[in-house]
Image 1 (cartoon, helix red, strand yellow):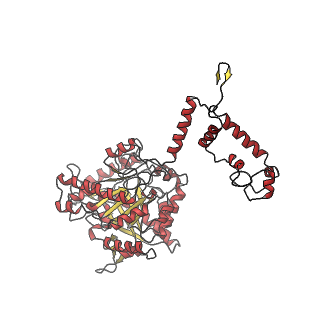
Image 2 (cartoon, one colour):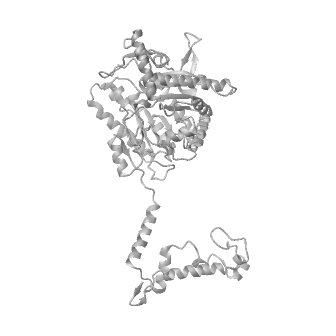
Image 3 (cartoon, rainbow, N blue to C red):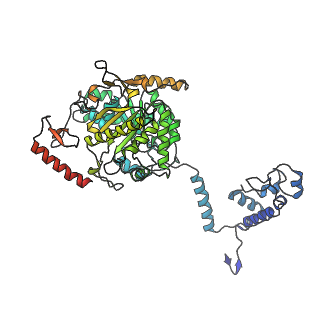
Length: 547
């Protein structure tokens, strides 16, 4: 800066002089020039109280003022304070320079504080879709199956497969963030993404308490819905189950184990779904009612296309996560979401992945089309029919048995256990853990895929009090009702409820052949041969379109 032909003193001149003197001192350092190897990571010549070093004029001791003046840890504020003591008039900053200094100091302080996970824009989008946000990174939402069962119109697939009471189930998440951007995500990517936790961390007790309160508030709001059964509505005020699968990756939450303990203390069962990108967190997880790992693809290439993971080693992380399931002890599930045209081939690859974890259960479910989204180009043609999901599951079962028969003696035997047609969901279960001989016919199997929830809470409490106490899958199983078993006429629909069909949307057909061609009408009467031929030709045309 030049004023009146004279150079204006620079406010940073003393600081620059200090740095130059420091560099010169380092160059003149005796032990550095002599190649002394006692130098530490922080700078030059680690202080070993050596007399030789003192005589050389370098690194005399910790109390040396000269050494302090050359320390790299001096902050800008300390530099300016030292300068002010020497000559306050010479250290004049231009106004714009002062603004930069203040701005840098302010941003430095802010950067040290964790940010909130959800931006105002994301919060607005999530609230618009019905989410109730909790704290800075959690949420709860009322599941449509909760409302269905409150009206006596049937429960979700977890009611059919595992015996939960859908109207007493809370759907929540302690982490709205996720490490994947799956093409079939039913939340349309309104939530944040990230590979690791870098946000503020809320208290788990607060999260559980607020989630339960908000869920009960939403239950209260359903009272005016036509058809609500008031006895169920009253029972729904008591939360008994929690599906940690709402959105995001719940296992990313750093205090997930504390949150699970909070739920168990309230006698709430825990169903946690993870995308398999955090194997260490899976390994460290406390015993829960049921742990899911999503297996959305059978090859590294299809995983990249379907899940669109943030991690470059996503495939290896998935395999490691599945391997962790082998040692968990409690119920584990490999969950496959079938997206027609995306991940419905290479069934042998799925079988090899499942074999890594010896999963207790294998859940195969057709993707649900949730409307058009800018984040994905999926449409209704990508949603498989129930008979297609059933056929896929049967082929998968053959591949699993082939691995077992091929010499892997440790590979457990699986078989078809349950189905829920309304959800396009089919369940494979381990024979050694969930099947017993039928008392009426010993040649047949009786399935026990349902859960004794009171027994689980008792076992979980014992483990919490004494971590050396262990328990396994068979310790809290319960009998599966006949209507929930695969092949039953009810097709997984609870007969205590009434099937409700919208006008013009009731199914015209009730039975199909192996190719998916309808064979019986809505009254379970055989179709005419001419009508079946028309339907067969129509199926051929649709297959050409879909590919």
